[in-house]
Length: 368
Image (cartoon, rainbow, N blue to C red; front, side, top):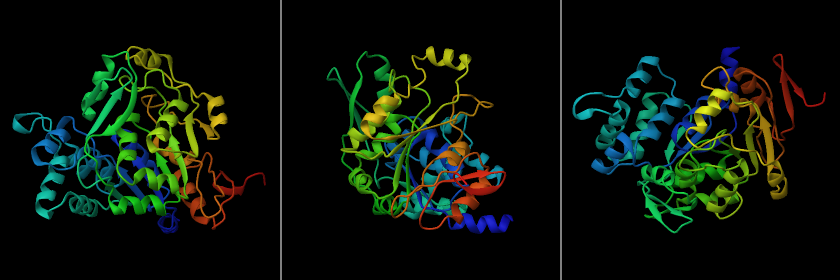
């Protein structure tokens, strides 16, 4: 059975995910269990922390988000993952991650960051691919409604906390082009996923890279935005789920979201209290606005209640993503199944997708 499922997973659908930060890597840990044809497109705008230090000192793409995505898709021993996530606490290397240094060293040996990412992926037997969205670091700038501007991903949220003004738009100060592999992954995808993650500093920066928004607007794949459960201090205080989607579409210069996936599980009071102290709360779904905009809304229990309560469960998102399209844009939706059943169900569906349910290990056409 295991070998059969591995074979089925190898013939899985082509999934391309765009984002950055912990939201993207969490999503990938779940998605790799339903397909081997995964491409993670990762923002290159990070300029804070140890990644920012390496970016500034060595002129390389910030490695932190890339490292996390590689590890999320890796098939390696726990000891190796612990090693690459190890963060030094003393001396000149205090705060640096060994994995980041490993990528930086590979860049020096191989001659390019892109080659280093491929080599590290090979070493760790990565499922799918991890691609920096551009071959050079991007620099983002926030323009606020009061007219002020703040440059640098790591400064935007902190500056927003000190203002009563909302972010009007995010833009690049150094126009960069998308890599050809990135555009090809978007074009060839059967399922495109944006988010979850920080709206203005993880998701939207990818859309600003030359070529990405055009490719997303013209893509034939079903385009899904996985909305954050909670708003984020310094970026999206008071935002609804529809506000998130509206900002994505506006920065992309047109519609790039067909379906928005939102959480319906209740958030415990103690978590709400903690977020309230950070001037954040649950992102209201705003159902009427979705209906008026012609964007499909899928409401599902995405919250992992037995963990930290406020984080998306990557495996549950993977089960519920709603959402495969091919050819005539028929759809498949798998509900309430474990990862192995999902793999088998996805692989068994032919060119024309219809709606399926998975119950007790059996795949049933919906309504039969």
